[in-house]
Length: 109
Image (cartoon, rainbow, N blue to C red; front, side, top):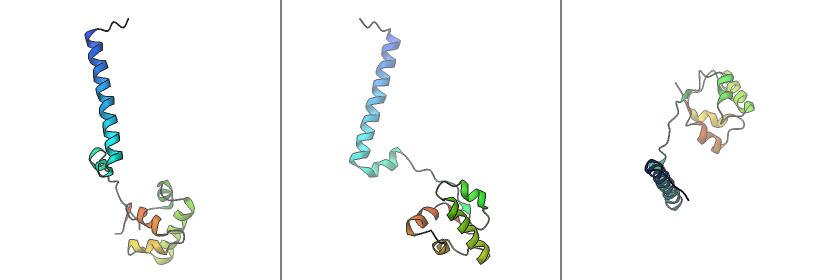
């Protein structure tokens, strides 16, 4: 009925093996979440200087809505510059949760 060549059999076995390994890894991650870092190592994104970034560049960042991007620039213009990342908390619309996300993408120079 199914007459595969030896090469086709090897390919089918290899694909089954890959699928089985993926299933094991998926279940392993669900059972022990700390193994996720071993399987999917984190990617560190380049940080952006908060005192030099422009409005258009901030708006391109997916973590920041346009309204908050404008407020960050307005705050920086009023205070001349940011002296620490903690000042982001003073920008209207940036609470503790958003601040935690933003401090990983900005730096102060």
